[in-house]
Image 1 (cartoon, rainbow, N blue to C red):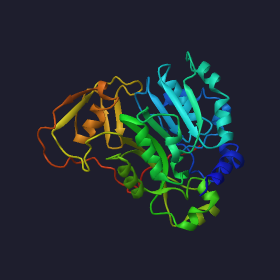
Image 2: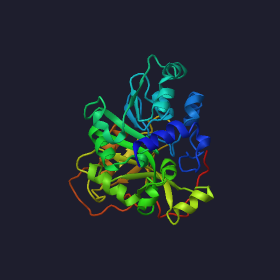
Image 3: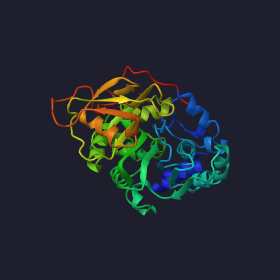
Image 4: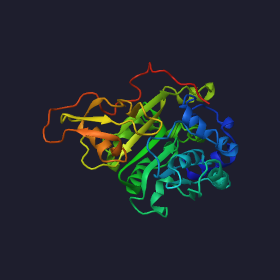
Length: 347
């Protein structure tokens, strides 16, 4: 699908989230109270032009430098700006002028409403497949986020390659997107409405894992997922028999991650020192680490904690001196395996 078609869909056809024809670009209604409090302060003009499908607010963001791919009108940029604080920076990139105009119009408003001493946001026009064109050097960002936008990119591999380059060592890409249970047929992929609704551009989930690893993001970790019900009979008939899910993944830029989760007899203890995660830290869908409890981990999980911004919040037990075989309980897995998982209400 051409860039112009997507720009027209999000810049001219859609004036608010009410104009969407399906619920694919739709965030779960359930979210923590602390995040609701932050979002309640975001300007209404920004909120009404939000088209995301997940929650892209990982833990321990104070002082972080964050890049939002496909930021739109800036809802997530502004929410994250409150979390990173005065010492952090949140940069949004989008290809749609109309969306960027709304985002840029409210920078001073959000500085004031979040009690910041300076504007800690930037917005750039650009294509997420061409991140090298942005005025940033390799290794600039601690975190890269994206909310239901990678599926709109023409070259998904280029997006992941560019993100890997712009991340610092130990940084992560934390993003939500729509995935299909099989590869999308060509005629469906050329349907402009289905593409704009975040469906026909969706990656087959296993192709995504391949692309992520090819970019350097070994051991992708799924945080959560929910199956999508399109709730538009006409469009639903056009996509059958495909199934879609919205999933959040975190991809770490770490050297030495192994293709399998290996057991070295290691464990960690979470100190409970991360704001809004005092009783437990959810690293991904397989690892909810309670405060004060000795928690066995594989070598990859150890690195995700010991060699990233999360390290100060943990005690580490063990080393890589002895190997005990495969560590059970990790792995990326398919977001379509658990069809019985509860669907969350949307919008």
